Length: 400
Image (cartoon, rainbow, N blue to C red):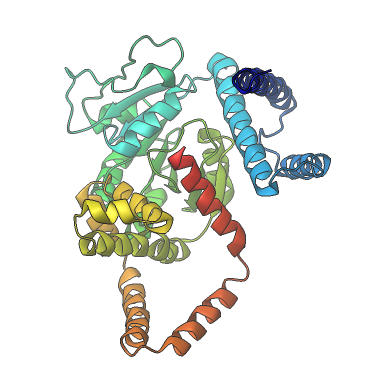
């Protein structure tokens, strides 16, 4: 057999194996739906961390003799688990939630914003009645920006009702979600409360909580509605079918509010914290990160050569910086200015930056190396090696 024929045969074999892999993945997803239905009937959550951990351990043990990078095997398992869970959630929403007797009515104030659109897609996927209110729209506007893959059988696009006023939102809804800039949230909450009753749940999703939680606690004493202060710890680019993470800041009754949250956002990850812990944490994980990326973008010249010569670390950091610019300037500015804990953290950051700057300017390699060793030691609770592997697996995926 000639080399050309051998190559052709090998390629054909690879195609056959790839088809078999896709078919097996499809079979796994179908089995996942069966399990999801059983869990739903029994009343178990779709996500079972213990079972997931057991699956990783079993599969890695049974495949340990293969000449196959263990970290890559873990990545494949993770992809399969996440996709299966996503399909299970979609399946349950389509077959169970939509046929339930109680159909929630949800209004989203600020529904044309990025997060408002995400929430509209999310709740519509459950078959709930969703309407929106936005000062950018009026009752004659047809609001249907969502492509067909979000809602099965919806035609080329699906549209949502447009409420004429905040009063209409409250009157026609069980749940009212406020998705507006931080500076406008309290004013909107005050107006919602005027028309709300004991059967209403009022939800706000701001990323800085101090003033808003204070106002919600005041409103909860005057009104019978349930007030929820939550923070989606993800951006509007996240999948509506994947398990997402939220923070809940209790207003009146942690237990009741947790139950209300689970009703609205089933099978989601939830962290409960007080308002001070939340805003202090956000000063680090949002405000400081945005600040660092703003400085990077301001410092880096517009040069195609820099892009052409950039390595993986810069590429990833640049992606993060540019992705941040998807937010409106007013939102980015608010995240820098409105968090009262950020200024102190920023001063500390600048002090640390100045210390490193001094070591560099004095060519003090020894002290700089010692500082890096100290940081490595302080980061021992984190898996530095895995972080490095994740970085390159992400870059490999981008380049594929």
